[in-house]
Image 1: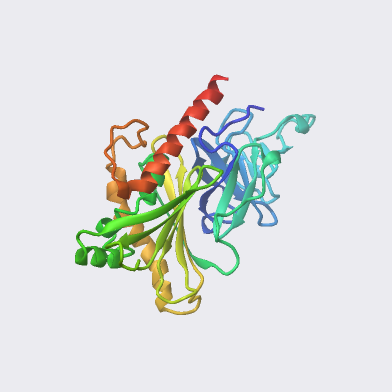
Image 2: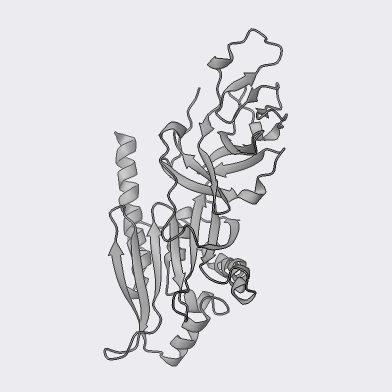
Length: 333
């Protein structure tokens, strides 16, 4: 069996789409990091994922059907494969050694309203770990948008704090923009802390002077290799609202922006649910700037001019350069 590797996400979990898209009775074609994937629900309703290739004649399994026995059936010759990749039936060949035929299975899980796939050997997949502070007590919505944007640029632009009042004046940047209008000489102050895995968290606030108290503090965090999160300041103590965003590489030069909008308050209240309605607005506001960046991939040289307010973007660019260098060495070894 030919083993397909993932050029960017090998060894990492990644969301691939919202769970609601995976219906019983119909295979779902997806692409993760350049690798076609077929997802389907087995007879028990459990989500399964295989590399979207029949080992017989390389036809995509996603154009086949689900016969109802927990397998996906290839449209070309009717070969059937279960969620572990095992071949269960080869028509017209009753003596075929089924154990010698396998499709490449991928570890697949569902949580937080998302379908997750481990990009690598299913048997070596570590437990799925979500970025802190996600977990019990958080709820909200899931939104996804695929755009012609390199995943690295997707992450970098999402980490950028300085764009918020200019790109999002009618959503998450409204208060920031009003404050900036009253304080034209304000400075974006920050405290950036690096983590051992290469990620970082940056608290930020608008500084108006050495003796002035800091207003609401926001934060952004990078979760290597392709995710970030940001906190949206709340006035009431104990309330938290955040976005966790994955820039998932799909096909060359394209990425799927998968957003978890989460909060710990107002599960059944109408007003807090506005946060869920704002998420598509925030993405729509971001689109124009992301898709017009050229080059789409984040440059690793000094061809772009940066300022102190670009601290998280600069930190990501440095991580990306180091990551690319390490990958080049691994490929050469």
